[in-house]
Amino acid sequence: METDQQQWRKLSGEKIRIPLKDEIEKVIANERAMGHELKVCIGTDSQVKGKETEFATVIVFLRKGKGGFMYIHNETTTQKMSIKERMLAEVAKSIEVAYPLCNIFSRYSVDMEVHVDINTNPNFKSNDALKEAMGYIMGMGFVFKAKPDAFASSSCANKIVH
Image (cartoon, rainbow, N blue to C red; front, side, top):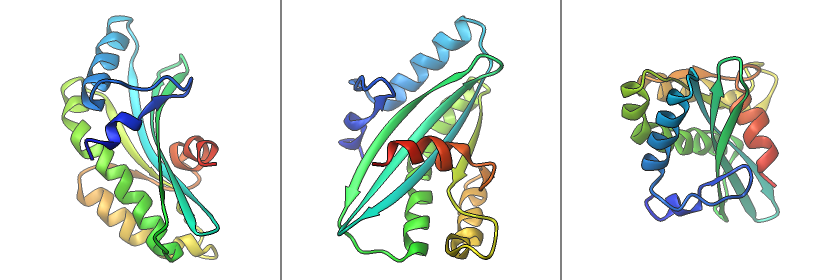
């Protein structure tokens, strides 16, 4: 995944040119120095366009009472997937990002949640993946949020996926 690290960018489009872990640690230290209390939400959304599926993963930083900012990563695949496979691929991409960063968040006492774009309503097809996604995320020791509480994936990443 190290090559993917170069593809991270800020919402402004500015590319992250240092390893993601270093960038995240630097930004948390700077935010703390400014007196901001932070919370992080990581989520992924995807969209199928013809033969391609595009994934957008976001790391959303919330400053308590003072807005927020995010980092973005896009990835495209031509692998054919069922809706359930695609939902679980979204979860896996979020975990791939959250896991190597969780020690930094712990060190700075920053709460982290993993958000999934899966509907809790059983009438929606994405709901088929809900139990597995919840088990995967919670089994990794992370806080799990699904729709309608999963704004990082269902709102932020959703706006980025083209």
